[in-house]
Image 1: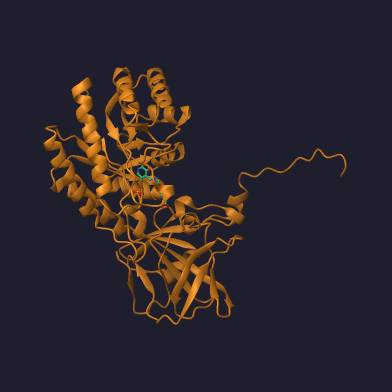
Image 2: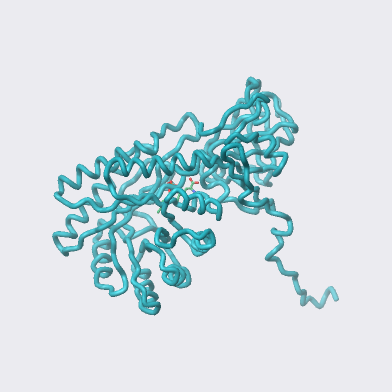
Length: 438
Ligand code: LLP
């Protein structure tokens, strides 16, 4: 997929660059991003909205993969940006991302984070709860700024996905509850606040969702609510944000539709529903993360040790694991992989790919058919672009990998490999007060 192909040396090539050469140059594990594919996805979303005549903002949910280079690419592609912490916001500012296109999310934004958002005059804060309504008003008054806001609501939709990544159901830590009237109360408070400019509402029903039914149901519910609010309080929304969550293909078990079709189906339904309710079509915002960067990322590992338990299993270890990709351990996420240096070789055995962390659960892939591999080989794991690097950690004091962007036959390092010195950068020596040892 994307610009991935096998070159005449039998090596996996991405963006016209030989991944084995990348491994030699930058070391492994290595994250390789296919820039052209990210552009294609970004344009796919945006063009579809344009073709449907719907005013929209496509905000990249940067939690999927955030870095200065990624934010610069998002800026270049005309995307908006969804950030969820002071750290992501800081990175966006350093990347010189247009502040008016930054949206700030989170269920417990701190005073300092909100103040940063206000002082930098970002485009929108997605308000999650009553405390935030108060804090934000106070900070805006103090800084003499009127902040555009959306209210995040939970529409009570249970999308079919892993339990941990469900967010739209009633029993959720996120947003104002629709059912109980909490959301309406929030709207009534917000419209009265002098320094809050309420643009509309937001919902996000979950992640890695293939069916458009859940999105449509949630959207219809939002519009029914807005109709009610308009009739009862005269409030008219200018923006409706439908969140992210569009699923991608990790393995053959997954059956996503192209990004343009997600938009066509969901927005088509919205248009019909809005017409039925005799309402004006507001601006539509969405926040895809995974579907913009997920399949654009590939991780290249060096193969290491092998353990064979006769008649039971063969373990093949790689030089990374849950420290650079925690998704299999956390969500039983599945991935496909090939030997990057011998893509065309036939599979001869079934192996299970083990990470190098001191943890039995650190298994990347179970039962993968592969050619007979040894420590001279490289393994390429596909679709690691979303929630891979961004959830990477230093368990076992393993250093986080480097990240390269490839496009048109050229590679550039966009995140350096962590060094041992980086690992101890924040450590301070222990000043012992023990008398016994002295
Ligand atoms: N908007 C909101 C409010 C969100 O909470 C999320 C994801 C997104 C947008 C983007 O969703 P996406 O398009 O990427 O599905 N770590 C998990 C995924 C957690 C998603 C959290 N929120 C994983 O690795 O699968």
